[in-house]
Length: 274
Length: 309
Image (cartoon, rainbow over all chains, first blue to last red; front, side):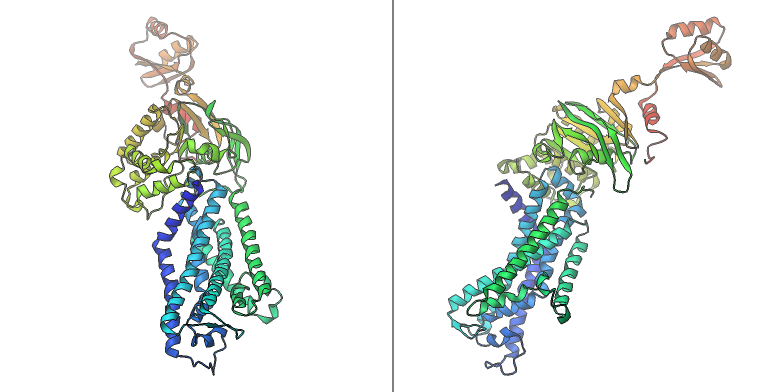
């Protein structure tokens, strides 16, 4: 109950901070731009000269696919940046302002403070992901025809079933971002320079993505934090490729647990010198 | 029970520097305890350990009978604190900043939060600036807001680390008055300072730090008693006067132009004066003086106020 009040107070601070609102606005604008650009390019329904990306050919037939295009496009950089800013900022900015020592003297409790901070990061990541889906869905509905959804495997399901799949896809992406948030939280406990934590997390994401694309390093691929992010397309097939999905979710859980534990071990044992 | 007690409290930094060296603090309940020492003598590090922000290398500390840092979440809500200057979110108003700290307190009653924040702001005279962003506060206002955060709830102990640092004389007076007021309510106050004049006027007890060690602890009266009173004779014949003082077995007789002095010890001033007159010393003036607290403080802490350990 009291943790609820602390969480609500911190969430309000993060959500109402102008910078964070601006980032959410940016994530909302991207699906619009992508939708309009694709509408103008007007891909042919038969997808003749398809540009290689799985979802693009489906888009002309169904606006729902704009959500999957938007999510997979934004997952490369925009969503990770948005989550990195809030996660990297979480503890480092308190240390930077010196407010950390006062929060601990309140006493907020070290483990409790960390849990609240992570709860806020996850909530923010969830918001950002759902904003992308919601805006893309709305834009897709306006710009393209909407109807029963033809999946990547060729099967056609009803619009309602398609929207349910979209919900699961969005939750999967949010889980990926929540795991990234845990890494960001851990890095954030190491410094009092928020910008350093944010940059470190972004370097990690980009490095992971680059390594994941080097065929010679394919053996480490599955262990990279970003490897399973785009595996949500497994949800767009019949039957659903659950083993891939579960491996992805397992990867997110392991990363969240590993870095969550690291953050906890570090934060509950280190002197607060800021 | 004591408000603060430590036993062999020690902090060695990772670089090997001994910041706090086996100190045994005993702060009585209801006292106003001045924690004195030059900058860099280990005061802030001690306070950080008392509040559970830093972990001691060895030794132990307790606040209001509760061991620290283990008891932090059980006792700190009874303790208000200001550590190393105020710290708030610059983009929030003063009131919103206080509300944030209050929300972090799991034992604070949310129903009374607004009233308590208003009262705390009122006590430090910031009610008019409650809706102003913290970044627009003056230094004195920032300092007072930090004290207000310490007063959000009734506290049994207030720990103030250099509460007048950087304030102008007006601000210093305000903070001093505030501390007196807090103490008058029965709250134990532990206030650190590198300025003796700061604590001399408000404290009942003092602890003096020098390069990480506690070199004196006791009441102000006890500190005064450690200083030996001297008898000073103003005379044209200082040499002769000094001889008389030496003949009376007074310690450390000195003679300078127009003045002779010695430690009075157990001798009675009346007798000393009579002996001087009898010996034919022309006495122009005669005084018994105790060293000022300032002199005692400098004697304890070494050459000056800004010698870092």
